[in-house]
Image (cartoon, rainbow, N blue to C red; front, side, top):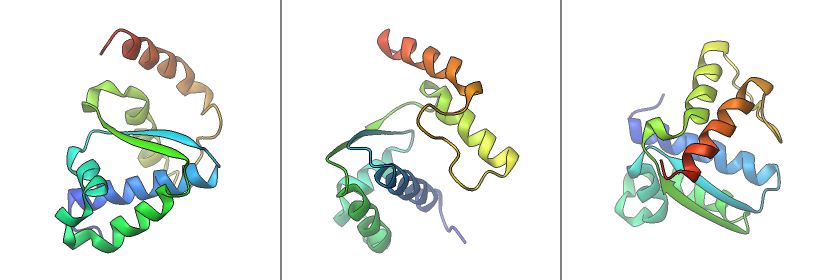
Length: 120
């Protein structure tokens, strides 16, 4: 059982790091609306209660050539929100986002890219 919001965010981060390293991605920017989760991964000594989980996350990250964490406002990444809704609504507990993602997501990916280019 997940005991806190931060633990849930870290478990999500672990899933993402593990998935992307398994897919052999090399350069990854992780975006999160949880500032604390990013801080925990970057400064694990400040979060001793999650030491074991953060160690596993950092081991998965070490498989990537280059990675960074960026904090984003929750409304700034509509794609991530749509995927999360789809996963919980449709009970898709195994990863189903591959190289290009599901076709219903493509227009949203393009819209997010335009917003990012415009500084939103």
